[in-house]
Length: 139
Image (tube, rainbow, N blue to C red; front, side, top):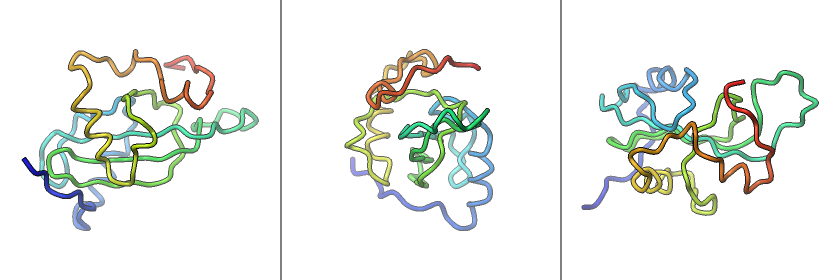
């Protein structure tokens, strides 16, 4: 089965799209309907990059990185450079070298993850790979 190509979020749905992704949600999966197609298949993923120096007091961000927001059903997406929020701790095993602007590698990782996987309790392979110290969750 050939999948339809990824597409930018339609102009008429951008405000609703950004509202859907505005609230913190530490997991990859959002429990909201897609503003484009109405299906509950929205996802968000932050790639954690260089840590923000600890000299920044009480920062709400922990690192510089990249962000993907997408719908698996209609294949609408956004990708950008971003600051990684302190609340983010979802894990999705994906090879950083496989990541591109389009969320193909992330979709493949979603398909391959265990249906019983608890994102919040998984160990961060990405943080370990970049030498980042483990940060206690929920603080």
